[in-house]
Image (cartoon, rainbow, N blue to C red; front, top):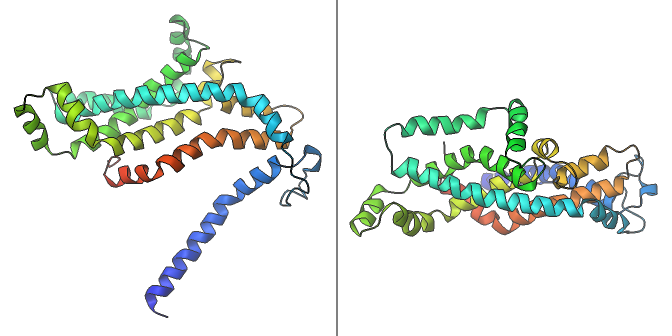
Length: 273
């Protein structure tokens, strides 16, 4: 057996161990969601269900179904808007530099380092003043504002790798600012858009802090609904696990569908510092 074969075998063994460790919570999530609540105990937590039941899934959907729709509307809206804004910012700051552009870029990036908790009170007062408190559009606006720094960073670094000669050639052909953006930058930046969209969608979908502070029922996202189930005095573990499984499906589908484009975007250097 050659050294290369031994190294490859060790690599597969290590990867298999990490995969098993990663999948243990998923296994517990699925088998607990398929059990009846009366058959769930510490002693039987690893055991497969004796009788497969969908009661937990049905009850979970009744609990979190409306909030799932809130999260879908919230995540899709915020992701689309902030991705477009971030691409425009990155385009301007990488290819149309002007006096003070580096300062503006630095100020935008500062938004990533401000703790969310320190802005909650002024955030709620602003949303209340403009009439968007306790609404999904208001919560989407919060995520759009907080997503702009990261989206600007991703697209600026991505666009910076595009040769300036392409921009100059497009200018010679008569294209202006938006013409170059539409005909040159957008077609070349599909991997960058995929990386940015997956990042933002995951951040918005998994958010709990803004959801619980900015909105009240029935306008809250699904993460808040799950915590409300877990925080009740009598926890139905099969319903809680089924709710978590249902809430995880959208982000899982996004990664499965766009995963190869995500890797391609990373390799293209869209998140290089």
